[in-house]
Image (cartoon, rainbow, N blue to C red; front, side, top):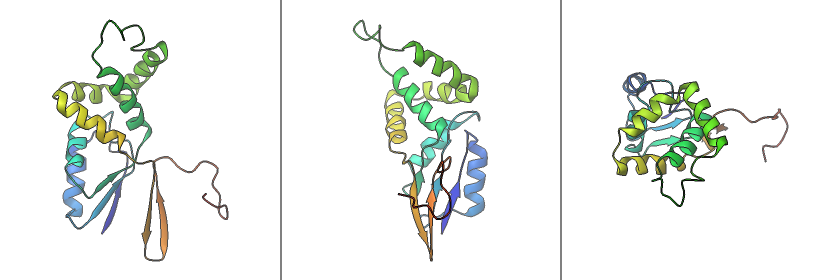
Length: 158
């Protein structure tokens, strides 16, 4: 069976409740259509759980993208050589925007991880795909987070 979830936004208990409700088994496939992180209190718990499930396929959302970018920048040891270019003014603006749009729980959860777990989470986020194509019966579905822009019926997806 195929399942799809989206916009989990750190709501770990709701995520677990849904897994229980659908009785997700190893034979099933779950696609998570982006925005795993931010806003809710336990985004790292969701990511760590998803990382352990080979049948869960994450797709990148805008919150995941920004978290990955900023956490990758923040996870670097600041040295004398890189301190001048570590965080640009644009990075600082992005950081403030991210924290104002729910990034605080993600940053806080990330800080509590061991250095090895932090690298594992960042590597996992880097593996999120932009979209997946799924054939079910006679139908083909394109799974993605935010839409196809100016798509219209009759227009080729390529």
